[in-house]
Every structure is written in structure tokens, then in C-alpha cells.
Length: 163
Image (cartoon, rainbow, N blue to C red; front, side, top):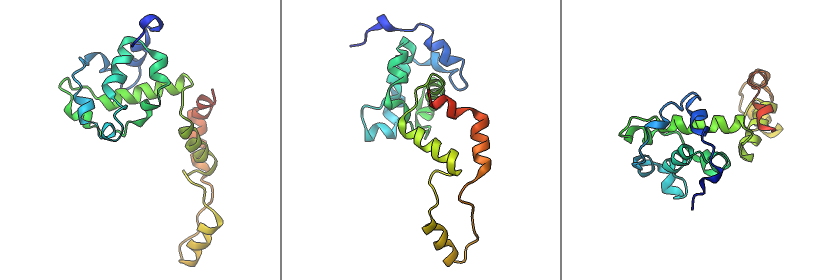
């Protein structure tokens, strides 16, 4: 059962202000987004319609702390099927961006961002990889890509995910 006593009436307006969140109010809850979602076929608990409805109701903590928010594959099947022309995947992305700004970030994303920041790629190159490349006659590559760290640093994302 949904308890609206903890609702934040400004939450939907905060999301609408985010890039990609503009179409939020157009949703009338038809569920075409959920019916077309390939992630939902894998896990019925994921429901883009529910994420949007809870956002419209102002259930900020429930939306931002939900692990399901992060499952959207951005295939845009929902956007293609939406009779209101809502860019559903972009609305979900706006909610994710807002979540990170508010200090909500799944542990797996933190791990990936730390790897990207430290190594410049999503996995660290081991000596084995480098030796294998050398044996194959491939050019040497740096273990770390410093420009990636500069970009991440300028985005301030690391400070946001450490909240």
C-alpha cells in the first residue's frame, strides 16, 4: 500500500527541471512502456510506469532508493510505444541523474566509476594482458589513461557518489 504522508509535492517539479525530465507530466499511466520493456521480461519487478507514477506522487525516497531505477537499458522501446510521445528512457535518466545529485548511487556504479577514474577503463589491464599483446605483436598501451581521470574530476561525479 502506498502511504502519501511522506510525499514530497515538489519532487516531480525537481525532476521536470532536469534535462530529459520535461515529459513527466504527460504520462497518463497506460503501461505501454512497461509492456514493451525488455528488462521487464527478465524481472517483472522492474516497471517504468511505476517509477513515473511514484515520481508524480512525490514518493521521492522510494524512487531514488529503488535498485530498479538503475535497470533501464535505454533501448527506447518505451519511447517508441508511448502514445503521449514521452521520451520515457530520458525521463528515467533524468531521475537517475537527480538521484546521484542527491547521494543515491548503487554500489556497482560506484565500483565502475572508481575503476574508470583510477585506470581510465572499466577493467584494469594486468601484466598478463600486456604480455599477451606483446606476444601477438600488438602495440603497447598504457595501463592508465590520464585524460579520463581529468574528465571525471572536472565532472565532480566522484564527490557526488561518495555522499
